[in-house]
Length: 609
Image: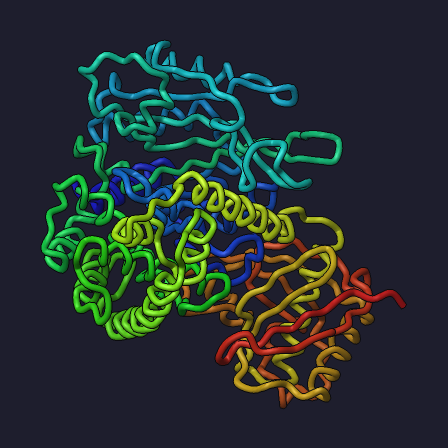
């Protein structure tokens, strides 16, 4: 069974059950400051999980390309990837546990033909705040899952929120217990170990997770959300592996041609266990790199660009270890082309992307070649290398531990692998802390101050278009309780006079105490009212629009035909917002700067009068 078969079956299964298919979001979120990448289908749906009405109703389904940078170091086995496609369905206060678990089991057994006897499930064992999920246990038993195939685990395993277990959740974050389903690839072998042991050694593969999103963290603990939500996610790669009874996702059609290209470029076989892990890393990383480039990301030393740089360079090192050379590396062009071919007409357009993908990867490989030369010269200077120095080479030049170790063995030296691991873990923990900080400073808490800043970004966006011209579009934002950060497209530095004019215009609209309206209307109506959006993106038939008005204009003829909307600002957005602008307070723009070619950044604060 092909991945396309499974994707199509999944969407049809749920649309036949009155779910509305919604478009996939971009891999790099335009307006979500909580994260660098879209890591699951639920990420754009947080406002609706909190109770806001979704334009398409209470039952939703889609297939979402996803990326998880935190899994980079995990890649190199039969199941872990950074890029994947997530099949998802949601109930926004409609059906609950019984229907969801029955739906997924029917999909697995009736649509994919998986044997019920090969399925194992896990459920939440409860803690001091949240009760044990005996309801899910009883539902699974009633559906024919043997009791000895049902396991209870704590919050580290069977609780889901974007920031982890309950104790790590910031105030305002939503989460809930979940129930995972695992497929057993070797059912004839005696089951002696714990379920999680087998899920780590490759015998079992997690193929879906039903999250029962019903809680929100408060300063006093957890409270029930206004509605009980179902948030399901299942990796297409893993479901395809299970449907074909092969535990290696890299042998599915989603990787088959990519692996063949790597074998050709390196003149090595994937069936060789020494080569297999290296090829898995190359296949995953270059696939992810192609998708990031397709989304407009370029290699750099910051944010998404840094992740892309790391993916390409790590792929190059693994290819070097395979004996495939480094730079120039013609084989990489063929591997990238195989990614484009695999997803052509489904998620990517091979013909329009080919030249740019090849150019970006080739230029980055050339830059990395220079870095490697420097790293090799640095190694020659070092007489005695320890774990910290090995990690410094890894961190500074992207030079992997294995290569450093091999070179010093040739010089008669051994490196303490444990001290390298200690340095590596220290860095990983710092990275996780930074990522959590980025998440915590986003919109997820829906606090009063963050909501004010979020509404102010709409006023700022329109004021920039008023002063600088209609070519200005938002390219990202990051909002904390201390300030707002707003990125926008513009080819030159704004003058001090222009920035002052923008600031005055925003504060004028705040002072006018404009009403903020929320509308759920058709996409055509939104276009007709000239609401700000990216119309080359895929939108649902119905969309969420926030209008701030009425449309007072100083010079209507000089503006961008906004008066047909009736609002000063009309913009695609999911919320949250204040109801009247005067509650925001006075805004002060404290900085305007360039962050990349054609992209500027404004930082602003609410100031006390």
